[in-house]
Image (cartoon, rainbow, N blue to C red; front, side, top):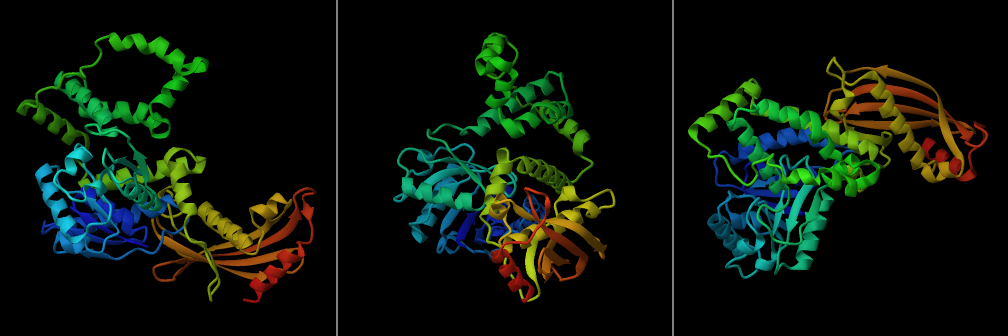
Length: 463
């Protein structure tokens, strides 16, 4: 597709690299850290496990990854540049000057969580192409990107960059005005500040605070945000009633948001020891996998309802290239197995094999014209018999391909044979014989398909 340069290979830079690489972009990374390649490959390994499980289609073929020896080498042929170096303005300015010497055209997004674009552009001849593109960890799963152009930005460059971000399933939220910490981090800072006071004053532990979030309002915020949540809390009176009812409490001294506790050694030790007691039994990699497992399941649930971030995933998936016939059978399914399809034995539940072969039948029907438009005319094919053979275990994140042979399409009958294979080595994991009959949706009885459908079916049988 295109080429992106990632400058800075930490947690955020690695997440950026994974998001673009797994969506088919070629990625160049520069980071002077001698451990950068190892760190990024560890992030990539986790992203390769997690991101494909969000989709019911296979992601595009992975792009090429290379590690550059300098800023100039990384950005020279890049269509987009993402700067994710440490939060030091002098360092960012030095990096931008090196970019400018090697590439004076491509958009430059900064992952900064605090600096404003006007501060980033100081001293640059091509500063109008620099803007804030602030992501959230893990970048390869969470779609929000806060885009802050600021005064003096090149609108065309920013618009082009936003389309690039959207093409890999991200959600660029443009913030019209420059403001310290943008939008989301200001909320996080407020919650973090109050949490520090609760720990310092001995009111709550780190685990109790996390429990209050994850068992309560965090679940509501994930799908509705703040204002929509409170609109419901106002009942039939809506937001106006909510504000009238709860507005006066804003004058009560509940919080300490205008004050910051001093981060003394005692407070730091208290927070650290409580955090160790809470989750110190798990390594960082184990925590990342737990986080990503939960995020995938929640995002897939939202996708199933076409809601919030789930709708974004569905829209992104709809942009993938269509499946096509192959010499050894029509490729009817190509995807990764999501974590919520596995059971207590650690492999895919047998009911999900039925789901895969049902999806394969739908894709095959669409290939010869029995698609949503045909169904809207009042006709379809109904399954009357399936025989599934379970040959090998299938695990979460495993990429599979289903090849479908149309064995009979004469008259009212449609006979399909599906082979579900592991994409990595072609091992056949399961097979399914499926018999369907053409029906009228008005009478719910069998009938002959249209001549056009019959003709396309005959062509598929002859392949």
